[in-house]
Length: 176
Image (cartoon, rainbow, N blue to C red; front, side, top):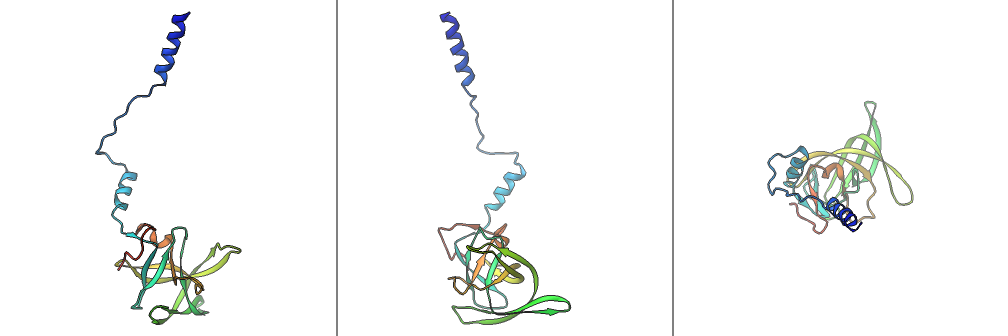
């Protein structure tokens, strides 16, 4: 009986032991997922606040970087909606609070977004803006908002960040 108990214990212990696996330091056959990670490592790292240029304006706006925001947002003044050739458009003034530079834009409304806010949801119209950020010039959607009570006139969301930047919130002002 004693031998049987020892045999059972020995079998249980050997069954519980896992095989040791050696992982090579260099992977020669990479999968698509691994390639994506390597490619993303070459993206510029930006901080929680960065400059963004709204072309043709010459001075940068400082924008809060928000990985939780789906769409970017912009503080606009004197917003007026109108129709042109059967399409909805908007005219607004963009004024840089730091430099005083102003520009009036007329943009076609691209779509509406439901923005979740504390207390109540808000519906905002979006426009496509020509922007320069980190040396790259591109078009991006921005919702038109009243951000006068916020420290930063712009908010950069995932629609701009994805595939362009890696965010490190421990730093700011990394872009020229």
